[in-house]
Image (cartoon, rainbow, N blue to C red; front, side):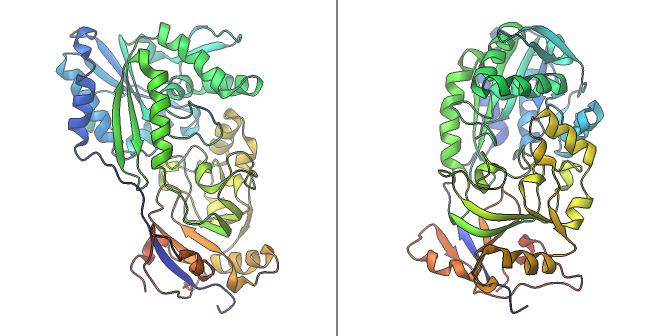
Length: 426
């Protein structure tokens, strides 16, 4: 189609610290806490597993299980998430099993439940919920990725503190905490709940994970409960430095092959697409600035949970039809972000989408539109870019052009292939 831009592929260079031996690193980190002084043989240890598709997460959880077995303890795994999996125990267990976190692989039971214990009332006047199985354990290990949150800013965002709040609070806790955040602030509520949980719920350790810009494990840190807050602040600074990014600060259209809860809490990471504060445009001080976003599909791992689809202006009809409306709405309402469940304008195929959307960018002709195309917001090492970006490659040592500009290729149904299928296409 001659009225559409030519596309070329670019490879980005990010910092690439990487943990090569995952199991050995988990073991050495936990050993450094000398937990044998606290954990006695025969005692139970609940280890959290969340809903994100964290690199090597099954291996990390198994290594933690093995460490506590070596102490003579009896570890088990608790799915720790708010309303994900449709807010059901079976749904949440299915999510973690989809990541390879199974009883057979990890060598211990999975105890999934939506039941919580109200351990006390927070200073702000709401109940503090905690997963029933975890509360009944002799010890709890909080395991999670530290990264910038998709909706809140501060020196504590997503990580161990949030896992104690939303993950171990389950659906009941997540609902009340998100309501409390609207009256106070994320920073205040996360600290308030964490203070109570640390005092009353036998947290024995944290296992913090940071990823690099290539969706690889960059750092694993075992953290003593008394150090959760200061250590997480340090790790967040590091996580921000290692985050991936889009190659250019402005674009007319971003095509995303897939969104999902395994990718980000909002399906697509708002830190990557510049929609952290406003649903449909970047704040004045926020980058990148994307005029439009179009969603082409959902990940299999998200099981129809399309939270975040409402942040996009456009979508393919097939993506909209694959949405589990109840699961998505439950998650978005629990998180206090109902607009994230709204349905974008959608089209039958990619050809129609591009031909009808690109004339909306202003006086720029569609052939000269600035278009970026990615698989998802975790995998940004290689990006398809329209020819209008070619002048911006000048002087960019972090970018390598891999192909010459070439036309978009559509199948008989008018659809593009996935962006990863274009690797090596010249």
